[in-house]
Image (cartoon, rainbow, N blue to C red):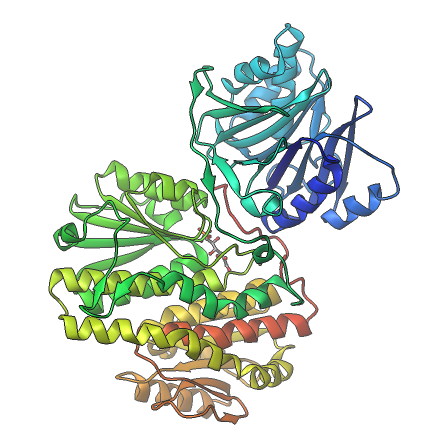
Length: 609
Ligand code: F6R
């Protein structure tokens, strides 16, 4: 769950690597480091803390280099410190690593017995020692690395340089992401595309077990047995500006405000209103095969799991197919019964979450078809799935997911309509109406932004409380969970999401005037029940914040503690309810002076178990 980057080419590598690292900082930010060859001599700089600290520490040195590797860390083995920061080095061989070497202790003990002396607590250092032990036997860096890889179990993407071979950058990928960027006589490796997006959009996506040897002249890719491989070049259609803050104080805020655009991009070309048909052209699962699925599993982690829960409600309500939403880390170990005629939908922004990938593989083992709803082109989940539904939200840098979540909801909505239509659960008239509602969604999201001032007032009133309760029902119960997760992850206030009907079965005991209760009041069959829940809270001296869906779409009125959002159908109301919750969490975190884009202990892609 770290970020790695490497460069070889004609420009000074150091600023390129530092700027690239800043784009990867969302992956981990407890320590950072850089290695490069300066006047043919290997130089390494590392420090605990953020990339800024590393940058300041080298800014007055006049350093120049045409090759280097760098790393931003999220600690797994060994506390965040200078000694544990990457790159690690043994005898002029330098490594940056993202992932976990599961058998590192065993390897470390064996190496120690042979006289190797370790200077860090990390699993990564064993890789340097192994490569160096083969290099000592006379192998070049490529072959020494190949031999070393044979000992490693676990997940790793690696960037390697060696003082003795100053014109080579080695990249290796196994279960952690690694992309090669192809510039003009210059090449990059990185955990994610934004790291080099301002230099090139042409990439090679490495698969597991592949190694790239990169010189200024080009890239050659082989498998671990040195069999040469031909790989296709993919062009990424993201703009470099998409990975910048563009005047916003935080990526999270920028990404909240990008949602109308992200939703528009996700729905573009997806349906025709003439027949009310959804376009799934790029799916390898044929539309006609959709009706054969008897059971749907939706599997994901964190925020994406909340989208999965909403997807369950959408699929059962629209397509009338039994659906289950599972947390990936539970699904993979709970021996799930997955009939062959099941569809497993994995939902993942990054496409690299370790538990989600393991659950996806478990589903394949059972012979189920897998659909990945994913935001990152060419990520592991998309490559292993039978079909992919891309959410075109653009790079999401803020650790707290916002636009990726609402576009997941939109993707699930469109897919549920396709499923419902193929199953004959809805007719063309209904699907046209449902799809037509989507066209109004981006504008209604814009309208919801008008509530920002009211939300700031509420944030100012409650930013010092210790606990929050979020209640919702039906499709908006998962949105209550998501609202609570947003608040706790960026403001560190304890918050719980609950299905409002469960309040009487326990949480009502918590209610007092120190704990605000936020209630999502949607239109429809549960509205009156939610209004009763509000009364129950008030009767016990609780403070209520209500977010209410207007029955009809009128201009948005404001009153303290009640926020009115535009009305839309029940499925899409999940998107509109999400927006004020994102803004509330954001403003509370600003008032509490929290580090919004890089909350403590978190990282964006959880590529380790
Ligand atoms: C929370 C958040 C996480 C992710 C989770 C899954 O704001 O972003 O809970 O949703 O780590 O990540 P992906 O979707 O990349 O699989």
